[in-house]
Amino acid sequence: MESQQAYLDYLENERGLSPRTRKAYKRDLDLFAGDLDRLDHSGPEAISEHVVRGLIARLHRQGLGPRSINRVLSAIRGFYRWLMREGLAEHNPAAAVKAPRAPKKLPKTLDADAVSRLLDFEPVTPLEIRDKAMMELFYSSGLRLSELAALRWDQMDTRAGLIRVTGKGNKTRMVPVGSFAAKALENWRKVRGNFAGFEEPCIFVSQRGTPISERTIQSRIRHWARKQGIPQQVYPHLLRHSFASHMLESSGDLRAVQELLGHADISTTQVYTHLDFQHLAKVYDKAHPRAKKK
Image (cartoon, rainbow, N blue to C red; front, side, top):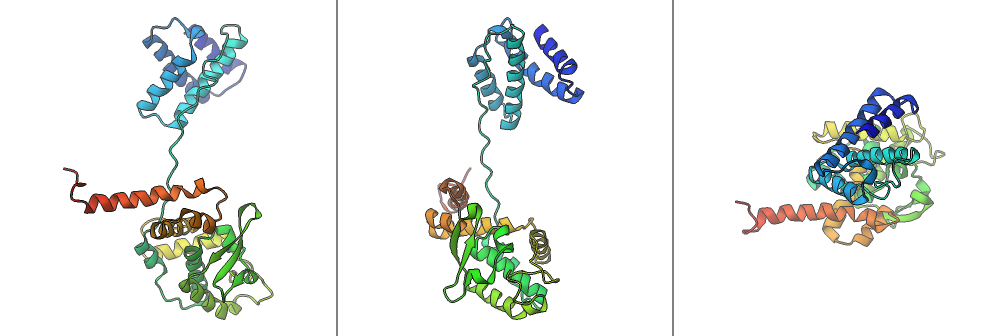
């Protein structure tokens, strides 16, 4: 198409785009031009929104991802903005067309056996006792990394087994502390004086006596995952995901899990129902006599 080459020249001479960017534009516009040839259209000037939607649907069927399809749409929209500016087209047929949504990525989790392997060790040094308390609390209460790092002693109600947490949007929620986490925290309280006095309000402190950093927490969890022989990468949010998934799997109470996680919108929590369904599907496939694939 002559108009396509003129547009690419415009991108080079007036917009000053790099050769790499222009090459990407050309590749995406060639897809569009190829579709016009296949459909025996005379040129881009008379193309309707229906034709663009057809191209996007075909690319989607061929397995092109939403990000790549969005890039193609962006190239077509830019091309038509230029055509309209030059008086070569009256409308932009790609203006209202949207790419298919990317499937929501399911959060990764540890299964219960892997969590047990991570947490079932006897700490000896104050550093190890602190680390165990942090990891037990992550899994027991589903805390975010920032929430655990900022946790203070005055947020704990040890008698009731609860922690008052201030999360995203400055919203406060109460979360329970399980017996394993409560015991680990009590052990940490006894030796914390090796690192800091109680004038430091944060529960978890570094060896220098300052509030522990989020990066240090991440590093210590990776250390213990390697030491305990966990093959997958372990990080604080993985323990939060595991808490949510295991809670939902056992209770089936989506609203309760939403409250415990501090999600403002239940749709954020619903992603864990997909994980739970995956687990149920695997159990079904393994156990049901008519489920086995031939």
